[in-house]
Length: 259
Length: 218
Ligand SMILES: Nc1ncnc2c1ncn2[C@@H]1O[C@H](COP(=O)(O)OP(=O)(O)OP(=O)(O)O)[C@@H](O)[C@H]1O
Ligand SMILES: [Mg+2]
Image 1 (cartoon, rainbow over the protein chains, first blue to last red):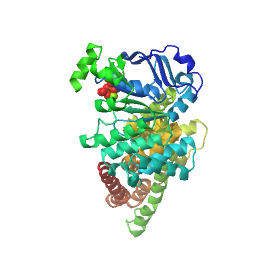
Image 2 (spheres, rainbow over the protein chains, first blue to last red; image 1 turned 180 degrees about the vertical axis):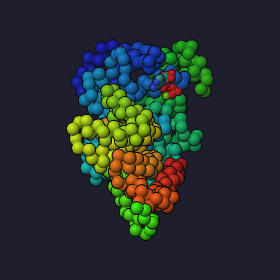
Image 3 (cartoon, rainbow over the protein chains, first blue to last red; image 1 turned 135 degrees about the vertical axis):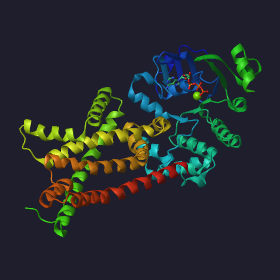
């Protein structure tokens, strides 16, 4: 286990550290409810992390803290060298450097696939629309739906929509990709096409944090699997060890339930 | 002296409809701008702004339009301004429309699924761009039908301006009725003209509602 407590200081210079994400003593409450309890986690560049755990254990909350969709009350999160607590500027930078894929796709229904993919690069990065379109077509090709560029999201299948969502995130050229149960809303026959896209992405060296219960995916691509329960990281380890000899009772129970 | 209700009287009433339309247009345009500001304030992250917007909405939704007209009309006098039914009616109806449209549009903004804002935020889009490119275009589609519905209410509401002496459709009807004393003919005509103004709008609102629900379930 990489138990690095001095990481926050080595992550001081934006873009230079070899750590993509460090979370240190992170605590989050929703009102009275303690949703994240003393989370400490470091993610190296290029590392692929799978997070699993029972419903309500705080998986979504954890990865949504990384791009500040949720704010924390205690602790420190540094993403790509930018301290999220350091003000709006660093939050803006972090959001540009991280892509996020949601369970419910969240494509913009009033825009075509191409417009979905070019909006943020044009408005946030300030690239020309010609360049944004070229980039978008390249990524739509990579997720294997170049022919859908001019359709509206509602005209696509769930699997296609999720691949558009991945392409849309990639168009911002992010350094880190966050996935929150990207295949949970899909019909079984569409799960594979989305997982294949994610496997491609992993093989290209993208830093990825994936909340998923697809244990085949975890075995194949994860460097580390993290098990959460009741707002805590209970156990983490390389997939081999994690699946074959889980140390904690709660992990064993959980793995027994989902397989 | 009582004169009969003839073609001439009929035309005078029809012509007065232009002032009803003009007043509705002013109130709707002013209320459109005011309503957008109220709606944005209502969903803003800044608490005092939200409270202010809620207070404004509650006051105008919780009091009769006629009292709002009276208060503006007589209020102008108290503040030393010349009493002018045009100005008073325009201001009162604009404020009234701002409150109602603001509340209607707030509902439409909040009807846009939260995942849309989250996805836009995660892409790095900031508040203004998020509103402009993601939230408002979707809210607008939801808003069309109830907005047209409110416009119908507003057109009918302008008839109250007759009471502060603004000569629009209803007031013209009263004037003609005083001269002809044929209330059934006169107010029948007035009502028919309101109907001709409002009915197509109601139809339009219903048509758009159907089209919207179809396009979302596509
Ligand atoms: N906005 C919120 N307000 C209050 N409580 C919340 C909010 N969001 C999440 N919670 C609570 O925080 C806890 C963790 O939620 P979270 O969504 O992170 O769980 P999860 O592990 O992603 O679960 P799932 O597998 O169902 O997606 C849950 O108990 C949930 O009820
Ligand atoms: Mg979740």
